[in-house]
Length: 79
Image 1 (cartoon, rainbow, N blue to C red):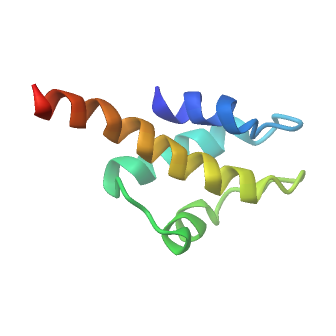
Image 2 (cartoon, rainbow, N blue to C red; image 1 turned 135 degrees about the horizontal axis):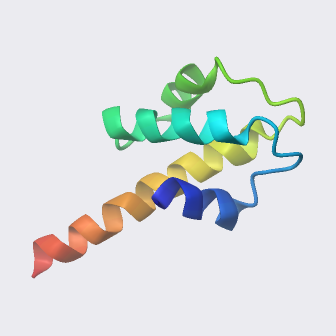
C-alpha cells in the first residue's frame, strides 16, 4: 500500500506504539482527499497522539503516499 511504502521510505516510526492508528487515519484521509495540504493533514491526524513527536515525518509521508498513489494512475492513463 502506498501509505505503508511511504512510512518506510520516510522512516516515520520511532517507538511504533501509535503507528497503526496513524496509518489507518492516513489511508482514510487520502481516500477522501488524494492531494491534501499540510492543514488538511494536520486536521485529519489531530486525533492521533504520537508521544515521540514524529509529526513532521508523518506529514512528509502522507504527501509521499499521495505521490505514490497517483503515479500508477498516471501510467495507466498514458497507455
